[in-house]
Amino acid sequence: MAAWNKVSLGDLFTLANGVLGFVAITFILDKDFLGAINLLFLSMMMDGLDGYMARRFGSKHTRGQVLDSISDSISFAFAPALLIYAEFHTPGDSLKSIVSLLCAIAFLASGLFRLARFSVGGYQLSYFVGMPAPAGALVIVLICMLFGAVPPADGAHRYYFIALSSPALVLAFGLLVSFLMASEIPYPKIRGKMAAASGFALFLAVTPAIAGLLLIGDQPLYTAFSRTATSIALALSLVYVFGGPLYERHERTESG
Image 1 (cartoon, rainbow, N blue to C red):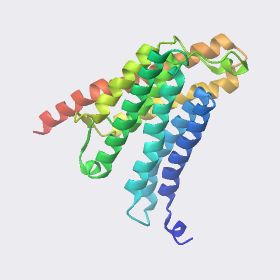
Image 2: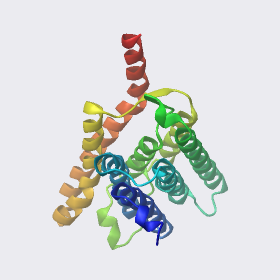
Image 3: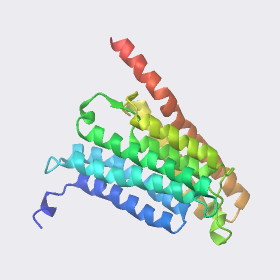
Image 4: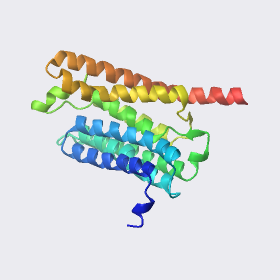
């Protein structure tokens, strides 16, 4: 029990991140993709709060960065990679299954590489080297919400709001995000207005789950609301994906 005496409040949020990622994996294995995605959104919230809690209430050890990377590897590397494969793996369609597997492997490997690079010194820099894994995971799960696999034909389908099933689009973004995470392209750290925008995007991403409890009786309204909220969240995320390097380059030019 001595080890647990060293667990701080920030550690609990970090552990919650990893646990939620693991539970999301079990949902993916059960083909409940929407439930898994909502759990991953919660893990992103935990990831955003653990650093604040550690700064606000202090830490009892120096292993927080390692613990954070381990939890992130579950929620933002393994779980999204499995989601990509599970959504588009099709028995009987070997080509589609192979492409899905390769995309999932690329995302997993890039995510793990990105997290390892960050934990061994990247966190000391004033910017991110490569797109951060949480941002990559957010883009992928939002893309899957709008353009993922068609849901099963049972009662649960009423909670889905896929705009168009487009495996090619999802897999293309999976490969793009994998490249950006493994690259050395500088991305700005999320602070100030950027943090507010990312928080707003995450809030919009989880609103369909809340709307499902309130609007599910009106299917057209629920679908329209959910697609709109998710589309705005995706647009804000893509601003960071494509605009982040330009912003960081501008900041370096101004400071230099």
